[in-house]
Length: 353
Image (cartoon, rainbow, N blue to C red; front, side):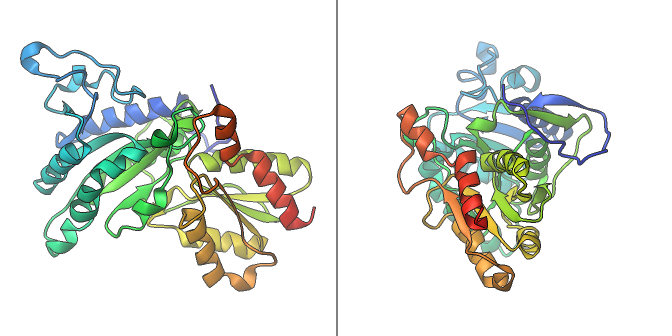
């Protein structure tokens, strides 16, 4: 089991809490939000176990391939934990309709790649309905899916095309990077009145870290610093924040002070946090697992080039996956993923170390 290497609340902060896996913090938040608001319900494939029909008895399920909803149907029933046919477009469309009428659906899309199956519902309905009705409606819709490579799920279950969703006006996109941030961002997403996609990287599922006992939210659209430094800014998102943190720790041992910006939110994008960091360090490496063309790494680089060019003492560097699908072969998959060695080598070259 991987263990997070930082206190998310900052040194010296003491609040009641626990060490908790990312997956457990995620499920605890679902349970808390179901208890807090009776309009919240969960819908998706395998979230309840079979059809979940009350007349047949409620059978607890495995909670999907990552056990995200395991046990919830026993406590909340089949009206709030809703199994669906294998039709992402169908059940996402139903969720959007229910959100327009006042419910707060939480939609399990299973794998990030499956967004493509429901893309028309996202583009034409979720993202545009509030605008097209002149602000008279709300769409309190939360979607979540598992993204990323490194776990042997092959090309059709390992994508990270965050930038496609971030491109759409009307959709908020958040990328938690540890148990603390997934709890705060998921709660904020469910309580938000706009559609929000919560991207859960599969390599984070078993990451453990400190999580406060009390309920809390993290403001959507705000990033954070997980390391403070002076020589170079490392920008990460989701799993690559963990990569950046580990790289920063190793660079510190060699006398290089790296500041790590964890984006947390891709739309809205907190430009201020990485622009301020670049103004201090004058050098930046952006780490994004997605392929390089039109990626979030490209967007962050463009913002820096446009708004902080005079602060740069060296070219902007990106560390990304190659412009290929994610390989199934474990050796090739490991080569595909940006890792600490890639970040360290790029940083040293940038600094001329």
